[in-house]
Image 1 (cartoon, rainbow, N blue to C red):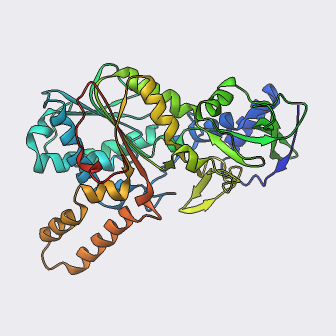
Image 2 (spheres, rainbow, N blue to C red):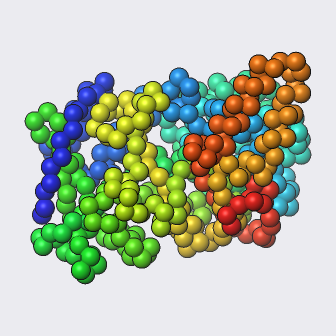
Length: 399
């Protein structure tokens, strides 16, 4: 076994979570970075998502629905087209996992109730949420929406079976815990592939009052198969992320979707853009009060952790389980194709003479399509049991 130790300052406002991690490591030995990240973010009592509201201007990061209702309205316009592509079923499941503050659900349903009553009447909005604080916030957000019928919105602990409709996510997959791996030359580890160095995984230990990283043999052969499937390896010395959780999630969605679409918004790239030599430290980032950091061992339980999605593997996982790609583009192109400029003008007409509000909303639109910011989010549409059609948001897409 090769051990390379890297020390980090362990500054935290959640000592109970640190103690839980420490005791686990003392009992089991070093744990994978995946298990460390999963505990920090998703511990049912002490984890980040269980103890704080992360998104919004007063939180740690901002998602598109928090910027302006136009995002939810245009997402609704696209989902309404998907409903029609399915033949306008009378019962239409719209399942959102990881709904944050409930802003997207609120704005989408609000648009539908005002602009597309048949679609609104058919829609049953189902939110999959495991965080009690976020679930309560979502109830508050949606409680202010008039026109909802009893049971039109409900909450679930996991994805339902036999979905006929759309599974919608916004920045969900990039929040899943990841394995971190690197390539090192070390004769004590089995080479993979031959002559290309050794695939090692980052483990986390604890000593001297701080967390310590160790490089060890990969915890699962799935990591090697992951890169074999892509036909590439990280460059030597680079540390990259492998999101096996996202692969499993996509397989689960495909098995539960009887007929309909999967619509995914997330930061990420195709594999040949993601696993490049100049990304020596991968894409793992932490956010605390909108300030980015590359240190996952600071403010434990009080900062978010995220990494970019490998959309090549996500598409392939869907295809292996019966999904077909229906569109893939950037959020900037998606919103532009759906008419975000015209939507802004319509919003302006709602408050004639309110010039200050108009410019504030225009700035929000610019934020949503900024190619260096939210505009670079990728949007992936996949279909199952529905004929191919040109989707509104992908009419100017990458294919």
